[in-house]
Image 1 (tube, rainbow, N blue to C red):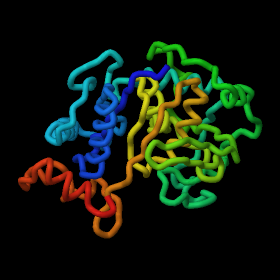
Image 2: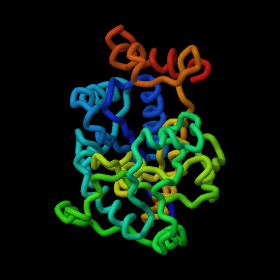
Image 3: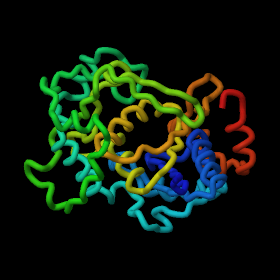
Length: 306
């Protein structure tokens, strides 16, 4: 029996919303509407040094201006909140403890510089270079073998936030997920078709919790998408490799893996994908210049290469 469609918008308020992300959110909204589903807005504000409250207000305003609406979110509530990641720490700690006790993760003392210098390959500009395995334990824990098995570990029970103190706290290390080397992680993307990435070759042991005591993107989105019942994740094609990593986390946590739809990236005239540094192509700036939402769609999202 098919589950009711639940999609999500997951902006990070580290800058103004640009036309590239706006196009992805527009596609996500339309896929939810076409399937009579529910759309969720989630504020991914874990990067406290870069996230700002004014960007949260700006992104909500820009999304509404574009004609995008949602049924659950930080501004309207819902049954599976909170919808702001900085308020969901206990969920991430529960998952971290489960992974640690199952032997799926290990503490790493390598700095970002150490990893960059010792990386086996530059990894095509991916967000994490291929880790050398310097801190990886030699023996593979039996719990990890179970996590790689039939996926029946079940959903971790929720724990009290105050139960993670002292030795039970992740702070002070980069906690890495131990990938099954040479295993092909395959999935069918709803837009781009069959995808395969080889663990240990295309990506290495990746961080799920940072030494500054912040859960990493890979862990947070898996925990949140599962807890919020997301059935399809719509996002940019630059995150295809992250999907392979996240599938391993879904398996290790015994959670249901959603479908994935990776959108083509919007690029500038030089072929460079748009990012928040392209302030001239932020929705906020285009609104100030008098553009309409229809013009944004026609002249930025639909141009050749978009």
